[in-house]
Image 1 (cartoon, rainbow, N blue to C red):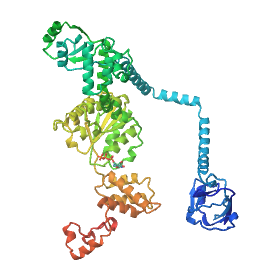
Image 2 (cartoon, rainbow, N blue to C red; image 1 turned 30 degrees about the horizontal axis):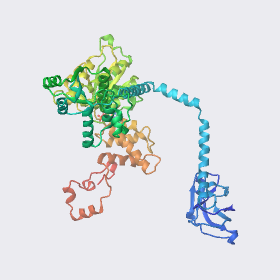
Image 3 (tube, rainbow, N blue to C red; image 1 turned 90 degrees about the vertical axis):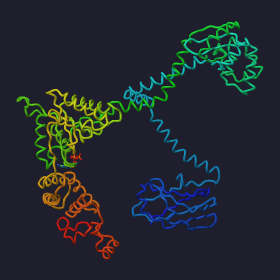
Length: 639
Ligand SMILES: Nc1ncnc2c1ncn2[C@@H]1O[C@H](COP(=O)(O)OP(=O)(O)OP(=O)(O)O)[C@@H](O)[C@H]1O
């Protein structure tokens, strides 16, 4: 029993978390402590023992302290002392720490809160100060320089875009002029008829007609607008008020109390008060009316600045919504997504030793490896390196593994793609990817391209309306034709459906060599099992187990056998065993053969079976034990 006391002379408990005892040891050590009882002494009141803390009031807090919660009680005693006794493992040094920040006893109220806040803040500020001291301007600048160097392209692109946008904004801001008020054409004609229009400008190449009116009419129009609309837009007011040759001057507007709204400077003024749009085939009448009324009229092209401004606005308003779309398109179309880039040439660690049970296929492929390595001088006799080798066989027989083994043995770059990666949404994209892949492979020659599930793009042409797929296949055919005779690039394809392939793909010169990768026989299965049992700790002799499992698994392919070994290891791990036993292996074989089922038939099932013995046979589920069908090695198979 280790006892220690914590004494506080002034202040009261204000916190529920009123005591933290620091052991100076890691938190894990505290787990062994059981709290016996707490005794409080209140000398000023004459109370010396006061037990109220229970075991559950012991909490771990921080990494090397524990905390007492006092059930919310408060001691309103100015002076108190208490003792904490704990059972601790032998040799554990404990010390009470009344000066701990969380055991502060202060006055109730705001001063205490302030104290607590300051106590919590202080260490954080200290930490911040230490960190700030460590930060040096030079290292920061170095960091920025390194970042810029690394991302020079991206940084320059973003800064160019930002600069261009900034320039556009500045240009628009500088060339901004208050636009004239747009009025209907009929109003313009009426004003002309009443001789209130003073000056007209017909803009060349557009339908815009700018015009000014004399003061009286402008005033009338203004008051009409006010009464009808209530308030005008700031632009219109600005345009009217600030115009130099406008008849309505600033003073008038000020009188009307409208000038308050004007915020634009006087320099950005428009020369024209009103704007309307021309009606087709009315030019004759318009000109004759203006001549009749003696109105000054002229025509002028749009100013360069204004046309630039409107072009810029059009471009920006078009491009802003289009940019995300373009970005998506770019990402889709960019070569960065191409399989050739994704698959960097890598040296595979798989060798022919890792592939067993497919000896004929291995011999064929070993020849290709010898040609790639240059150990067989096939050119001397005028022979050519086979362009393509097609691996044909049921799923899981090791076609992919064989291709990887070829790459591993030849020690050349290996580009592995699944043909489905060439199936694209955009016409021509799949073909471009094929082109990319072959270009990269050619550059890294001697190399091997492996196309898995070749039937995804190599299916017979013209059978569907899928133009994109046909184009991709055409490109593949072209690329395979395009190898120069001395180019050491071999294309290995794998498929489960050779009958679905386009005949052009299988003609000599393309996938001329077809290698059947079939189901392994018993000897083959034994060898495959031996490969997969290499790294598994077995209770018995691996050879014996391989023979046993091989004899029980006719029709199983390499992938099934690899799965059996893996399942057995998992079962052993589940039961917590150190080694994989024969039972684990047998259970894994059963699982692979019959699937995972409940071994024990359910009680309801049993009862039903007793009552209606014909039900299981009706459902096609007869008891294997009754049928004499036994599991491997006399094990009962699943019911
Ligand atoms: N002959 C074999 N020797 C050793 N392991 C094999 C063999 N065949 C298959 N395996 C195991 O099965 C796994 C799957 O094989 P793989 O992917 O090569 O089959 P596949 O014939 O390409 O199948 P699919 O036609 O479905 O693509 C391999 O990773 C390997 O672990």
